[in-house]
Amino acid sequence: MRSRQWIWIASSMAAFFAVLATAPFSSAQSEPPQAAAKSSTASAPGPKRDLTGVWQLQGGDGGAQPIAEDKDMPPMTPWAKVKFDTQKPGYGLRGAAGGNDPILQCDPIGFPRIMLMPTPNELLQVPGRTIQFWEREHEWRTIWTDGRPLPTDPDPAWFGYSIGHWESDDTFVVESMGFNDKTWLGPTGYPHSEDMRVVERYRRVDHDTIAYDMTITDPKAYTKPVVTPHRIMKLKPNEEISEQPCVWSQENEFAQRIRNPATPQQK
Amino acid sequence: MKLRAAVFTVLVVGFFLTCGPVRAHHGNSAYDESHWITISGTVTEFVWSNPHCQIFMDVKDDKGKVVNWAIESQSPGIMRRNSWSRTSLQPGDQITVTLAPAKNGAPVGFSGNADGKVVFSDGRILKMSNR
Image 1 (spheres, rainbow over the protein chains, first blue to last red):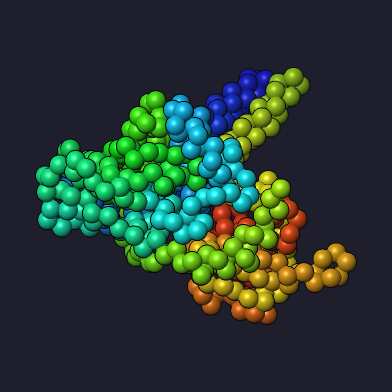
Image 2: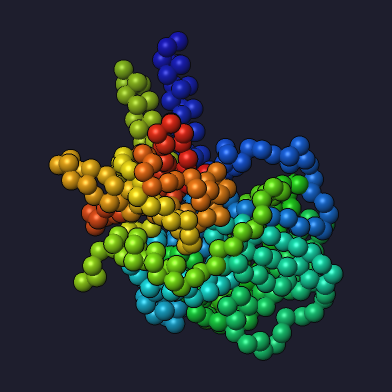
C-alpha cells in the first residue's frame, strides 16, 4: 500500500509541475491576491458592445512584458536583423545594463509597446469613436468606429492610425497602421518597419475580463506575422488613470542617482 | 526507497522548472535578481516621482562604515495601487528592505517586483508590486 501511495504522490506532483512548467503565461496571468475585492458581477456576462472602464493588463511580474517570447518570434528579414543588432535592450536574452532603449531619453514609447506596460488603460466609447487613454505617458489614441477605412498614405506616427468594429457582441477588433519605425516592439528590442499593421482583438469574456490578442504583420521586418501570447485584462472599477509622463528632468535625475550608478562602465 | 528518491527528484526538478521561466525574462539586466538581499537602516530621502520612486537609506556595512543605498521602486501610480503614498517614508524612519542588488557591486538595488518589500519598524510590510 505504501508504495502505491508513493507512486500516486509522485505521479501527481510530476503532472502538477509539468503543467506549471509548460504554462508560464497562464500562471503569470492569475489574479493577484491584493486585487481580490471583486464585484459580485465579476463573472457575470459583460454588457454587450461595451468596453468602457479602466483595464489592467495581467502578468509581467510588475514590469513591462515582451511582445512575445524570443522563441516565439518569427524569423527576421535581413533589413530587420541589421536594425535588431543596433538596438541594445536592457531586458531579455540580449539584455545588458545600459543600452540604447529610446524610451530612456523620453522618446514616445509608441504603439503597440504601450499596451504591454504594467500601468492601466481606460476605454471610453462615444459616437463614432472609442478613445483609449494610457497612464503611461499620459497618452491616448482615437479608434475610429464610424465606418471609415484606414488612410491610404498617412504620415508615419508614434501611435499610428486606428479603426475599430464589433465583430460580435463581445469582440471588438481594432486595425492599426501608419506607424513610424522609431519605436521598439517591447523591452527586448525587436524592431518593426513603417509597413507594420496591427490587429487587436478585445473579447469581453465576462464582466471583469477582456481576453486580449494581437497580431503584427510586417513583411519588411518579419517573414511571418508576430502572434502575441494570449493576455488578460481585468476591469478595475475603483481605479483612476493617474499621470505618468516621461519628463526629461526627472528621467535625467533618475539616471544620475539610480540607473547610471547601477550600470557597469561601458568598455 | 527508490520511489522516495524518485519523489524527491520530481520535487526538486519541478521546483526549478517552475521558477526558471517565470523569472528569467522580466528583470532589468543591471540587477542580480537571482540573489535577493535584505538590508536595514535609516531613511535619508524618499523621492516620489516618475519614472520610478526612489528610497535612499543609510546602512552600516559589516565594518561599521555607513553606506548610502539607492533603491529603485515603481512609478507613483503603481505604488499608490499598492497602498503607498508620498508620505509613506520620512527621513529618520528605520526600515528593512528586500532588494535585488546591482551586479556591479554599487550600493544600488531594485525592490519593485513581487520579490521586493519594505518592512517598517512597527512590523507593517509594503510591497511595490502585487504581480
